[in-house]
Length: 492
Image (cartoon, rainbow, N blue to C red; front, side, top):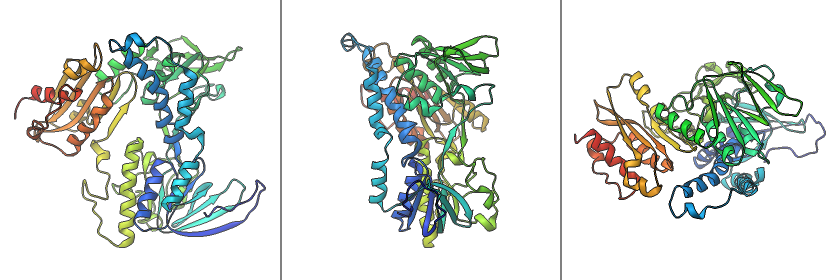
């Protein structure tokens, strides 16, 4: 390991280490880049200023789903006769939080560091900045520095952070972001949520099941960019579970009251008071102090890349073919799974370019992340779940496709009625009429996340409708929805 050892006393010691590839950011995305470049025979170092494993492992995907799962399991049991009668108690909140803590390894990265070592990936802890062509200077906690040089590539995988909107008084009330919401050690009596996206919906759902009184403050509607029926079903379910969903209003001010509550003033003249406020209004890139100016880029902005993840817009003489960006920081698709997909493409293309091998950068090639453009799968783990891939009706129409929209009530499928009494859900498929392939699919309902990968394969593979008729769903399962959607379309 290249990191100098020492106490907390300040020192100006500088060491220099040469590698083939430097990865800035040891989250899930950066780890995948490093894994691929090492497998490609390149000496790789990864730099991290916080915990190895990053946002997903400690403050996002894993802890948030752990918080949601216990409540979802109880809710699911309550929808099945026989099981419903057996569910007689309330959630054990302390047990839920302990289970959540286990998924984050109690915010220890020892296991992740061990994996890096076993994989042959070097680790340097500290804050990284670009300081020259294929050069990164790392400042350690004790003030010493390490200058890392890369023979082939530097990859920025620094992710994103929660956006704090410019609302008077908001910063002073110490608002929660997704980090505080997923790592809290107690459940507040009341939680106000500013925002209506995925984080807002999931955390409102989790905290409501954990006993908090939840109020959502949403400028427009929930889950913008998804099919409108998804927002309708989720909004109705949240309200049924006791969440107050205020739409068409904005927060204009925030202040702590004498008893420590947060009072939020809305633009309709009303006030919402809660013990804590969660801000979930978007993300900003972690590029503010990265040294981007050394390659002609603007600090604090998203990094634009081509499909091999090479950074565009940088000074050619400085950034050439060595600066890459993967994951949230390139703003293509802000999902861990999509960032890991980009990481695999980037790691492999870096290895290919380093070895002088041909680059397969045609659409859907080995070295590109083509799916980012129109085949991104995503799940919102609320109640009901929203699972989608590809284009919505609005997006397909905007792109100029000649389409047909297929809708079907998921509750009419035999497998769904067995799955839960009174199952409520909807499926929609968007068909490209000119090619007779699927452009997008959306499922809304309990446990629909497990239906999504079949849809993703159909969209990415551009499987003809005629061939899908021969993919026979097992009976009685929820996957029978595929047959019902095809029947809506008719035999080609």
